Amino acid sequence: MESIQAIKQRFGIIGNDPKLNRSIEKAIQVSPTDISVLVTGESGVGKESIPKIIHQLSHRKHGKYIAVNCGAIPEGTIDSELFGHEKGAFTGATNTREGYFEVADGGTIFLDEVGELPLTTQVRLLRVLENGEFIKVGSSKVQKTDVRIVAATNVNMFEAIKKEKFREDLYYRLSTIEIHLPPLRERKEDIHLLFRKFASDFALKYKMPTIKLTDEAVEVLLKNRWNGNIRQLRNAAEQISVLEHTRTISAATLKGYLPSQGDNLPAVIKNSKSDSDFSSEREILYKVLFDMKSDLNDLKKLTMELMKNDNANEVQKKNESLIQKIYRDKEEDDDDDYEETVEDLEVLSIPEKMNQLSEAIDESNDKYYFAEEVEEEETLSLHDKELELIKKSLERHQGKRKLAAAELGISERTLYRKIKQYDL
Ligand SMILES: Nc1ncnc2c1ncn2[C@@H]1O[C@H](COP(=O)(O)OP(=O)(O)O)[C@@H](O)[C@H]1O
Ligand SMILES: [Mg+2]
Image 1 (tube, rainbow, N blue to C red):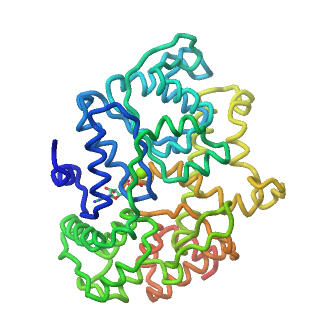
Image 2 (tube, rainbow, N blue to C red; image 1 turned 30 degrees about the horizontal axis):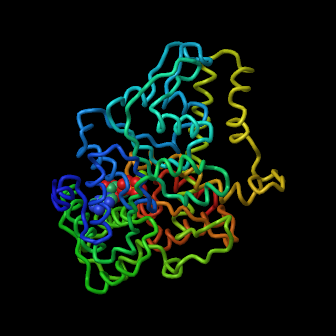
Image 3 (cartoon, rainbow, N blue to C red; image 1 turned 135 degrees about the vertical axis):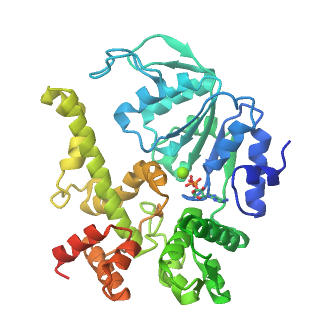
């Protein structure tokens, strides 16, 4: 059996934390079996390496490995993506299509963000887990497949079960073995190690001398809460590597790249509705931007449908929920239903959308991180927050738009537009 050390090297995993080592050891141990594994841990802790290790060390390694981000696939198409469909199963199904479970026969499927699966899909998944059987959408023929499932989640599955968003039987079926990855703040020894690794990677990438932290800066680094875990740490290292002229980084400089101190205190949990906090103003801005991106993607999808299908009525019927989601006037919506209040739409729906997008974002550049949590106390509107953030950033950079835009994670053009819009 390959040693933990060798595996870490092979999969580019940095760190020596005993809990991390134990998780990798567990992955090695379960790999020769077909046992279902559930990988848990906050966003950005490195969950994606575990299914890769399991697949590569298993007898399935010559079979296919398919990673599916369950939160990123629209509810209307997920069954067809996973299980395939028959010709004519729905409008646009002009051909029979094989789903991932058919394609990955003999291999491994990684179901990332499995908590996002619609309940109907959960029923199909349970069946395939239990006896390897599935049925294409629009078919009545039972098919067989031999797929090993590794799933991952960053949400509290018990909560999801309690809210009847996730089937309890499926949860137990998926989590025969649970592999938990600790948050970065619980792996203090690894923080500086990771930072140095990223600093040297980015120095190489951008052909600049490696940044180095002063002792006080290292202290700041270790005290930070790292809600976005390794993804956030890497982003900070990248930003500093690119933006700082002086290559020795002081505590004060480093702080400029981290959420402010107050936000690093543990979140006060108000009620079950929100188990969390926005850890920084910057995140709020990112969330707004990604929310917009999500709407844009929805619109693109709808436009595609309309282009493919000249019966607008039918498209409207088929995409009713999507249309409602896009066109509902958020300000005027005064429904009292918990899911529907303006506040929730503005705040709580964002992490949901973020989940859907996270894969796309991961892929694009791993640049931002998101806390899965929302602070109830947030009184200022996002609009005000955005304005305030832009002002602060511009002040901090003496009005230099380029630097402010980089800090805010938006393009200079967008910043320029916002300056005009807010009359700054
Ligand atoms: N131990 C580690 N060493 C080096 N890089 C890591 C480590 N863990 C995670 N990463 C990097 O951090 C980023 C986030 O990891 P990822 O697996 O996508 O997190 P998750 O799926 O838990 O949100 C990725 O770019 C990944 O390569
Ligand atoms: Mg992930």
